[in-house]
Image (tube, rainbow, N blue to C red; front, side, top):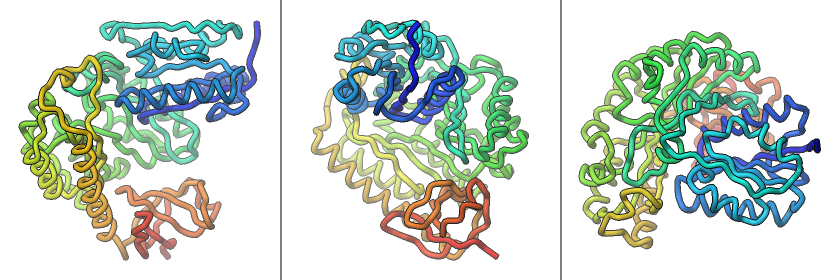
Length: 434
């Protein structure tokens, strides 16, 4: 049997993909392979794809062609959401040797080895209703932070989204199996865990547990000093979860909450499960219990039927909510979703204009949040990356901080004084507090 010495990984999309790629990479390392990022001088290249937008699909196709052009001897394997939705399309690209559905992702190593160096252009497919497997995963490449997968799939069928089709129904493994994964992360020396999944607030659907139960047990894991919740739907952000996080020394005041639109009319068309009033109530509750909380919000512009008035409602609503950051996405039509058939499409030029307006608001809100903390003290977990004599880290409420490089501070939580705001890079200059 032919063996390969070097495997390269290229991950597109979300932190969930990142956690899964890292877990796949560990299997190759355990079997004696050298693992790297990218595709230079590798024998095998694994691409973990995303399909949240048409741009993501196009980026994957372009990367495949570039890899094959620059390293034609490499076996190319594609998995992930684009591979789940359009396996034949990817397999038809010159240079692709294997395409694996999300259901088969956990078998990637065995299937690659079984190729035995033979180029096949093969693919596996799996209907959405058969996406039932759960692939436990966590990342281990970063010295300070790990992304722990706690849930997969989504039962929501929002009108614009393909994730339900790409990931299947909401599912998870029991808390009793997740806690040991967090303990493994702690044993590896990483001090912060980011909980990730497709719809993590829906945790417990398959085990009769709840997200509140999960965070309560993870809070007890020794060696982990910080947890962050990657993203949670506003209708699943319960009082119990908010109150627990506000009292916990480990769960940080940092929340990522998608709203997608500040117009109730558009939220209805999107088939979202809340109103702007419910969203506002959740923001108010967070700020009441955690006044320094960092809140990031996802918003889509240019959804079919979004008028100027609807967009203005969104703009004014977000301005009132005063989040710390906005993640802005021009609407991208996805084949097979209900939104494809919706009338009153919004022109691309209008989407661009609206996105730019929200981007300007984001910059204003982000800088305003940082300015509140100039002169304050905060705890920062410092990372190993150095640039121009500085090292970087984040406060509990996700303010990016830089201070003079000191190798002894890597992966340490240090008390600092926030001295000065660098508005160009949106980061805070700090010094170690006495």
